[in-house]
Picture 1 (cartoon, rainbow, N blue to C red):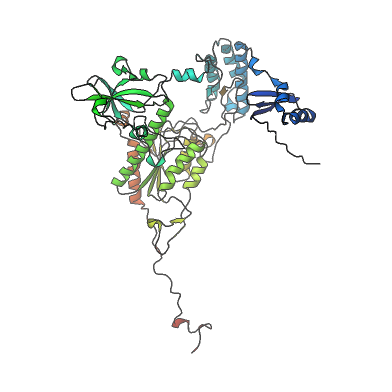
Picture 2: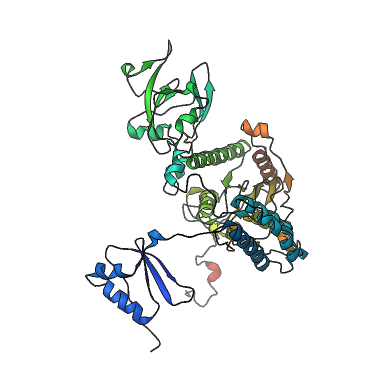
Length: 538
């Protein structure tokens, strides 16, 4: 027969984690709930083993062929392993790099040039330096050296790492001698229409939205933190020293509510000054990563509101989205959240500043290239009253500006180049990073590290290899370099210029709905139809 029946192997109480085959293909291994079992890679070995294992008395037979992985150990001679890692990295760059001529670099000579340095490496980090120098001979922007097995003082234990992690309340604070504490300057807020975001709440631990769940009142800018877990914040150089290892754990704060409403009666507060008294507050600080994400999301929402306010002041409507990356669900979701609610606006700002790449540029370009070619109108509804607008549905009819900067990289640059080449919009900002040869990061070394090889060359008829991006970056149509001081003070000159560009563009090329054809065709029978054979004679 040319077919076979499948048999599902289910061992009650255990779950399958991994399946593999030996390099000589004589044995198979299965890992169930952390226990690895090795069997002969034959029909008899397979059936004999699992026929007994799936019986009611599977525990007695399963344990017979368990590998004692707890006693496994591996001895590695670092000096020799470093030589292997270097040779493998050099070889895989040779075999994976998109140009078989290696950009006319004498690759064999490169190997010899840096090999003598490998014998001097005493740490894995030093080998990374050698690998980076060797790979940099290609002058390709998508060569990254990272990963591998490094000496870790925390021995890889997450609990030790968290114990040394500096927690955060996700707010901006300023040390104040006058108030003997830290004055809250700003509490980040994210888009209320998308919170929770991807199933996760994004609020500051000190915000009212967080604290009201525990029956407490949130703090406001101007309030003061004077103590953490019974210790005065002025007794240490920085308040964050009292938050080491406190991510996700409850801490007791002493706060002066200068601008916020008190949770407690006056009897439960401790007098600090003649006019203000402190009161306790229980909060749960964030990890550094979550705090960074909160601040980033707050900046995105603030910039979006700013863009809409500026457009309103200038007499037109605009949509705004910021894309942190072009990677998977994160990039796709950001585009969907930003584009579809505002597809009918007169202008659209796509912000790819600080975008660190990915591979969804073709999908984004496909969506914004859609054209409206016909329009819908019912008896009482149209696009302005909640009805259908046009076909192709969700086609953007307005003008597009893309914001770029020196940290726009990889697929963020590819998208920007596509917008320019396809005539979809204008680029505002500064010249981008300059990585136009793409990669898949699959040339991994034996210890899990990598010296990535740019594997996929890009080109077209106008720019040739690298689309004019590689080593050069994408130049904006309008150069605007944000002043660091003004940026710190809250002014976004690149965004403001994008608004002015859209205003001028709309004045020159207004975006309006085409007029309907007017009165409908008269479909009634009248005297002009008397000559028609179908018209009844008198």
